[in-house]
Length: 497
Ligand code: GLA
Image (tube, rainbow, N blue to C red; front, side, top):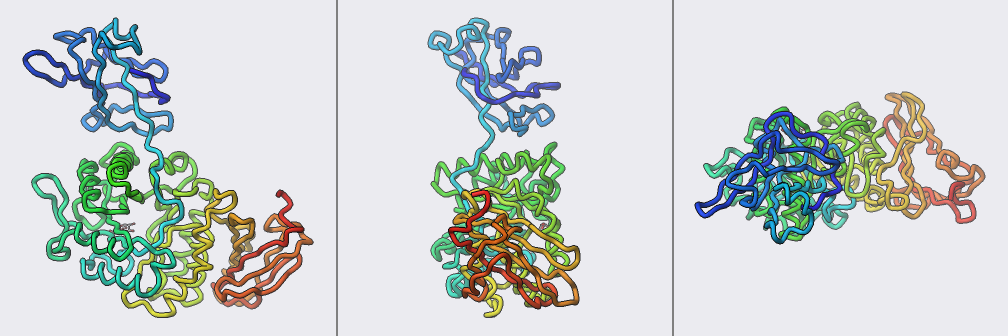
């Protein structure tokens, strides 16, 4: 068999995870390839089948039965665990690809590439998540009411598409292994609910965890990833959050995620519908940050968000240094929005929204949208504000804005360079008690310090005017902010352009 571009780096200190299907007149049987028949040469795994009985020529297929041998794994060149595969072994007379191997009765097992991003989302997901407000008190009527509300209150038209059910929708597994939705809370079943949500022009998400139990002790997906993914696919689920609870069951953090990713990619092949994979957790640029974007669409970077200003700030700060990892279709996730929930002042809610937008974070609203106030909707549905979040950034590849200037305990200036070269700028007063002015100089934005630029107030949707050299938001109240768009006049474009 052909070699692949994968680097098979680690196999196998214990029982090798390869089996061959031996077929003869009496039938067929999967047989483990002995340890001393497996070798790694360059980027290929060589299976020497010459010692197999009845004979190597009886081998018709080879499979990598990884899930039964978790102590012995292949890693590809990305350092990711390779998932199981099955390949036919070409019959001897027709094998022209590797005659040398065939003569010695061997087969080179090719290892498929790590899962790549499927034709999936490009911009940060926007929608609803049930956890922050409903916790376990979620049911199908509430989900329908939320979907109806998102249509009626204009959220869908601004881009909020996902209706995500978090923990507690599941109660047990059937004997077949298939997960069962709580029959008391979801009596119509998840397929019917997905159909309903889809009929409203929206998408449905569910939650699981990579351990045996979810964070609320419901059955989770450990050793059930494939069957769960197939079930979600059959139901028409569009988004799956895989939580971290009980995750130590697998020897590697990403084992569960890769299984889901690959299963969702197959689902996409079958249905044409992408399935968003949200995972928990990756909190550093090194280690997981080097590969997480190849596996997941979004990954939690922090502890659970609370309805306090300090929690909002802690979460957005924690993922700020991870800006390099984020790219179209793959986002750092500082957790859900708490807008509309009791605990944040109105100023803090505006700043929370603007922070999540400038930082290119998923906009998953964790409040009771069926009864959202006009004030809450005003924060959530300003199209000029959400447009910053959905903008793929400079060269369509800088989805996450950053802190460009900071005075500890007093102020922060965040900026995201947008696809058209203008800048979204958030001027934030971080002082707990005092009002103050916050200034952005054009030079902070990489513009010529003598440049003139148009400033637009995104919340008020009005042009503030032309400013030379800098702009100051005056008398910002504690924890409040100004969210502006700075568009340099052409003759004064960025110094590095
Ligand atoms: C964890 C997650 C939360 C939520 C709960 C549900 O704490 O981080 O976002 O999903 O589990 O149990």
